[in-house]
Amino acid sequence: MIYEEYLHYDLLKGFHILKNLLMVIPMLTILALGFWYWQHRNKVHYKIFLLASFKIYLTFFLSLLLVPYTYLFMTGVWVSLALFVEQSMYSFDEKEKATIIMTMDKVKG
Image 1 (spheres, rainbow, N blue to C red):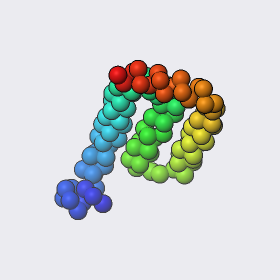
Image 2: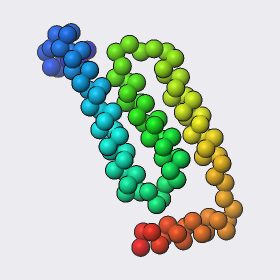
Image 3: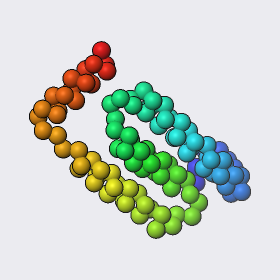
């Protein structure tokens, strides 16, 4: 384990470190994703962002769990499926694409 090899801690201290990381890293993930959305809120549809950020949050949260339950890892598969379905709803014709590009240029400029 990392805490034994690099930090030279015993098992109990490693559990305490992992418990603290389980609280800190997901919170930092939420803050980082919120900051990113605030900067790109005009470019990203909120439904896509919410599903994608939930998927990223789950990745960090589930990777830090002490006991890896198999059914918890299926959550990521279902979130990916929901993200795929949500993205497939956005099909645009050429006129709509041109309007979106012009709007994006106005936001940037």
